[in-house]
Amino acid sequence: MQIQPFSVNDGEGIRTNIFMAGCPLRCRWCSNPEGFEKKELIGWYRRRCIGCGACAAVCPQGIGIDLDALIACEREVSKTGHDSCIGCGACVKACPEDARTRMVTLMDADDVIREVHRHRLFYSYSGGGVTFSGGEATSQPEFLDYVSRGLYDSGYSIDLETCGCFDFERVRPSLERMDLIFMDLKHMDPEVHRKYTGVSNERILDNMARLSSLRHSDGHGCPEIVIRIPVIGGVNSSEENIMASASFVHDVLPDARMELLPYHSLGKIKYEAIGLPFEQDDFYTPGRDEMKKLRGIVAAQGVTVADYR
Ligand code: SF4
Ligand code: SF4
Image (cartoon, rainbow, N blue to C red; front, top):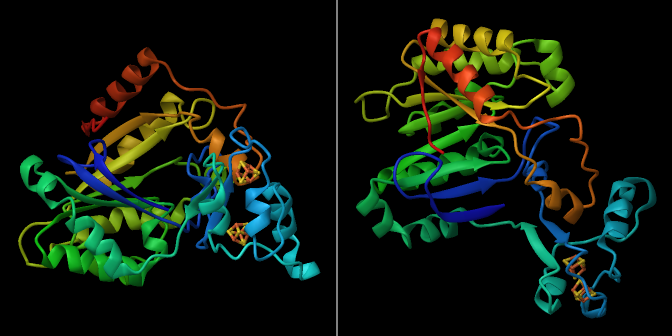
């Protein structure tokens, strides 16, 4: 989805974030909806569009200005066989207003490694490195394995942000190269979890407990673990849920820390760009006092509170 240099919120020091598309969850509060599917994706920011038609003039598929019409067409493509976007990028180059943009691009793994090398001075000066994020990086296990091995063998610090829903043994070699793993915990109730994310939490809780079995590939130490709760007001922000989450983490991962991040709705414009409805009106952003209280509940369960923001 993106290779984002100079991040300071996703691990130690200055880091390059590698956002990889594809995710088994469909969290209703997701701020990166372009990462739902593993496929090239072009976005259309209609508010920037001046209607010049340059995109339509170069499109080899005969697609017009309104990319939303294309997206609607794509949803029916299996039924109708309509032509649809092949992600060639011609319209992106032609657009004078940056209204057409690449949201997801197919990249060669070696090119990703080369891109990371370009920023190596920043990592060495700041104690930083690379963080795999998403979407969901574990949804491309071979790619993650190849790139993480290349970076690990070059001596980079590598971290992972994950939703926790993956085949643990398949991803284990990549996990054991990580200095730090951020794993999300969205709700302790399996049915509430399913309602808001599309899947139950059983596999995630199971994988969380298995993190304690990880050992670094070189035999020295193990990855640090931070369990992250995206605190969505109206969904998982109750004191009972936060207490149950912290109690679970304390029991299965006694050395792990927890980080609580308040919900934000910054992804709204991306939903528009890819023609998906934005349905987050019933969520709210917990205030400073509420977040402080919830962090206090975590600490009272004997879990250290982390803060990378
Ligand atoms: S990426 Fe290519 S195929 Fe897709 S809308 Fe743009 S010009 Fe057409
Ligand atoms: S080229 Fe860009 S500005 Fe012109 S019609 Fe297409 S999307 Fe709009």
